[in-house]
Amino acid sequence: MIETPTSVKSEQFLRKLLNEMVQRNATDMHISAESPPMLRIDGKLVRMPYPALSENLARMLALSLMSTAQRRKFEKDLDIDFSIGIRGLSRFRCNVFHQNQSIAMAVKAIPFETQTPEELNIPPEIYHFGRVNAGLVLIAGPRGSGKSTTQSAILKRLNEERQQHIITIEEPIEFVYSSSNCIVNQREVMRDTKSYEIALESTPRQDTNIVFVSETNEKDKLVSTLKIADMGLLVFATMRSRDAVSTVMRLVDLEIPHYLISGALRFVIAQRLLRVICPSCKRVVTPDFSLLREIGLDPEKVKNLKFHRGTGCPKCHGTGYKGRRPIFETLEVTPIMKAMLQAGTSVIELWRHAVNEGMVPLRKVALKMMLDGETTLEQVATETFSYQ
Image (cartoon, rainbow, N blue to C red; front, top):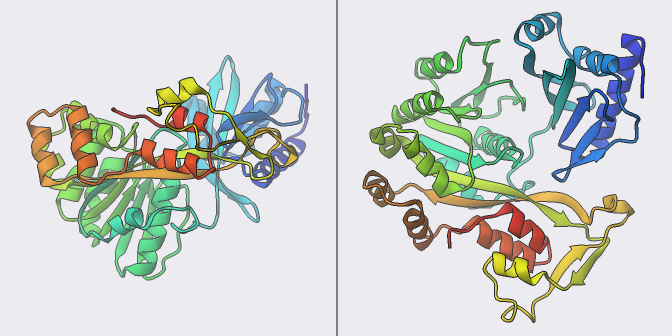
């Protein structure tokens, strides 16, 4: 077990861990007593090559990232969420919390440079939704599916293409933006404003055109967000959900007034991150027939198709995968769909209507990626869902 007696040594050790995190393209790092540090790489947790951390070191690593004010808040609330930037390395979002009478920490890497939609393989129809002038665009998916990254890429493109005022309301600030053709002002809840609702209600008085907000999973937040969008602002928000249609149904289930959904909601973008097969150890394999049936494919009808998997090599650390790629489905909330929602139409019927109107489901996008040899049958089965 690693013991570190001084704060200086703990800060040096933390910098070493964060360096390795960035070098290995990990999205997250976990620090916890009685366990070695762990990285999330391509969606999976991987142990770092260090012994288990002592309770004292885990505490010192977490506290070394906090200001005096943040330490006081942590002592009062028992957990804290904040972001930091380390020159020459990256930005990080940190969540520190108590567990079993010790301290643990989850750290998320946030690049200094915001990627473009093209760099993220975001289809043009996704970021072109930003060309509407009013209404709410929801970006939906489970935790860790890349929603914030997609949102940042859309903001980057709007910042380059428009001449407007953009305000972000975040808890805490993750990506940092410089004004380009737009003016971009970023507000952090509990630092720059007392609450999400107060910041949102202030936007019309600040000559704002576009608002970007962090996750809106609670009813009160969603109602406030929809009200601002209904006033003529263009609003982008993220939400944890399974797919596009279930996102819309969740608004109904939360008993949000129909006039707000009908008047403000414009588009829902649902996404997933699929692991990409390592090109260095990619091989043709025989598919699992039970998985084929699970995703709606007849083994007999696809027997002439090629399926691939990585066998594991040093370049992919034995995982068979190298990186992840986002896939998307986009749902336009049309007048017909709004009428169907008001009439109490089932989620399956809404999904069928959306597909008939041109929505390409996540499962179908994932299947194409699999048949193109980019991902595995297992990824399609575990990361996507079908109502059929």
